[in-house]
Length: 133
Image 1 (cartoon, helix red, strand yellow):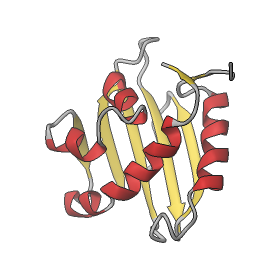
Image 2: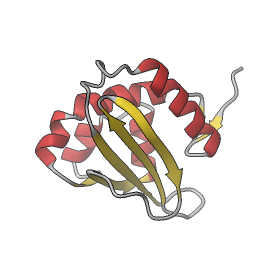
Image 3: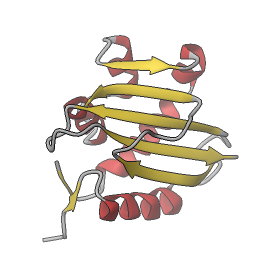
């Protein structure tokens, strides 16, 4: 059986970066230039955590995880750890989570909805990582 990575651990981040760079070409990412900080509340260890993505012309240029204040981003999305875990496992779509207020968005909602299909591609790749939640 393949090694399982602890969700949001440094090892999971490294595997996520490797897979995202290998599987998502700038064309598949619609050459977007944007950044997003996902803020995880109610994490299992009791901390607040973040997952930060930055894309430049469709290429992943930064992927960070941590429990401090996240970098400034075009989009700041806040929600419970369990909601983000369901999205990462492709059990819940990011657009539906936003529209049902399971996630809160700071940023341009219209642009965020236009980028929803790109976020779904990203989550599809992340869902392939053997992960311990």
